[in-house]
Amino acid sequence: MTQSSTGPQRRKGVARAHQLFRLWRNEPDDPVPFYDLMAREAIEDLEREVGFLAGQRIADLGCGPGFFTSSLRGAGAEVVPVDNSIDEASLQGDPPPGFVLADAGNLPFPTGDFDGVYCSNLLEHTPHAPKVLDEISRILKPGGWAYISWTNWYSPWGGHAISPWHYFGTRLGPALYERRHGGPPYKNAYGDGLWAVHIGSTLRQLRADSSLTVVRVEPRYWPRLRVIMRIAGVREVLAWNCVIWVRKR
Image (cartoon, rainbow, N blue to C red; front, top):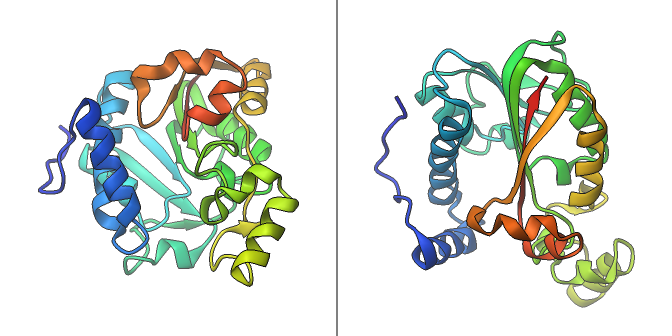
């Protein structure tokens, strides 16, 4: 069974968009409500897609302080939380129990070790996103699943703190931001915590992997508008945060 929570409850339609935007705007100063809601929504979405999580062995890549790890465990899964930063994993206190300090592009796990991989908002924070995708494929069991989500570069928030200057490119955009603000952002400056990752190239790599099947591609915050993901170029801007569901053959 999925765990219950006293946090903000999932809304629908325009009310949900407003709720997410409000919580997201407050996330830098008060991250818990936003990530608590996203983590509980993730469990609902996962169980609709892959069935009950109880008993499944799942890698939570880029786990941070463990919001998703906690929800996955609340649903009965055996979760291995992984991050390459002890500081990120300790943002809410001690790292989540069982925490593994590792690079997601070079994981210390045997081939075929996991039933599922949950990879939320990691790809844009590594200079080697293709290696992460290769590792996800490697550690999945046959029949296993992966949820891969990230903020695509050309979305309104693709540059994170430097947005909207990122629309001027990966060199000029950061330079213009620094000229205006007197220096780089305190966190996730381009080339130091943030890199450009695009939907098209990510899909091409996953589809070229003969051991994987791309099940579905959708915008994370408004999945009912997944039709836009069929339009190259448009999806890079409007998706805001891309989700790719895959299965291991």
